[in-house]
Image (cartoon, rainbow, N blue to C red; front, side, top):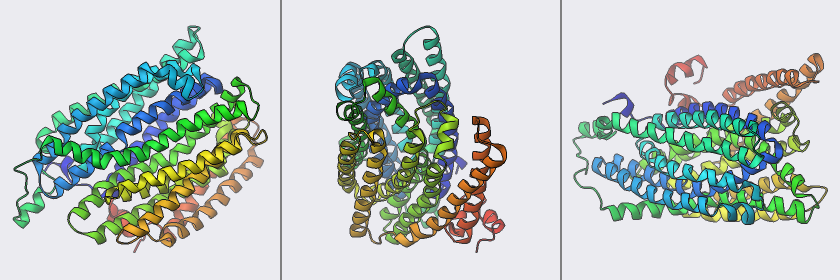
Length: 549
């Protein structure tokens, strides 16, 4: 069996995706941080507004349907149905193409309405139009990603995403800079930066097509072929379902997931509209000042999204793992994977969220020097909220993989209502203004996590233990946070904090010391076990090196 067809354990697969995400985030920082400084707070508000519209269509098209493909392919693979896997992919690709064409036309021809009426930021209309081609391309790419992920092969998705971000970053920055240097305004500069998204998507799709073409022979063999040969159990791969049934299955699984996730994308766009509206109509800010406040809030969101991006690979990896276990009737394995994955999400997300909160001042002052003074406080609150975002993502993935995807819609709706209500009241207060937005985010995500846990307790064979998930990571995170702040302040006294260069050195020292403390305590408290380590490449040697029993 070809090496690239070897089934990866879900932690192994998640590790591959995480390495890709780390590279992506570095490239994303190279893109968004200079872009934020090129466009300024006002121009960045246009960029963020257009992205919020794009995310609605992007989420509708890609959040649920790839998960559905992944589940269907994983189930077919578990039963040795090769033709079913192949036909599922072909039907999904055609379906995604139609969806992409419809959504791209809506974005392009309704851009003025989205920007001016819906978001109350009419200067963002050109940026919304520039996003339209990307939604068609990313729909096609998502069909490929769902297929490979369902087969447990995370390598194509990882390479593909890195290529996409690389070309997006390079082309977007070059185009935006050239447009602004030519004397064009901020709306044109923002649209130029967004054009890079489409360029990255073209490269992404080309890679996926090439990968499937060059690996076509090995992709026809089911992962489980070796196991079935030993057991003398032939797979039911002689007949695939009708296209209409596959489409029905894709939509029956994908639509609830897509709408649940889309609620969050809509919520972000509503957040944009609500903030702009309440800052002007109730808090008394001018249109320009409102754009500046929302722009610095958008810059804080760049870092807020980092923990979720690093945890998302694990959510992608566990869907086929849990679905495959359930398809084989192994409920205990599915429950174990569910609890372990949420625990690992907490182990990684909690220190990242706390780190953003504790180091929010130097982070914003170093990377967005000259931005509005509200930045550090906004990031501190968003850092706390980022932990609950990560837990929510894992809870959603567990419910979706277990066949309870409809419940995630109720979760998203309830949390969204909480966030909107808090934002509506707080942002309108002149003394609170934009600071009310992250408070609403925190309250909304806490509510979502609580509702999801209720559903898991009620419907899963065994609900994840809160003690296992939260207590030990919290102890290690508390010690890490004290270390980070203490080392940063000590270095600040020694070297000074009067310029961004020195501040960066002091911040780096604090973060490095905090990582060492957290890593040591995580191992000693048993937050990461030998079982976890052995599921990654060379895991046995790593576990022995770390003296894990």
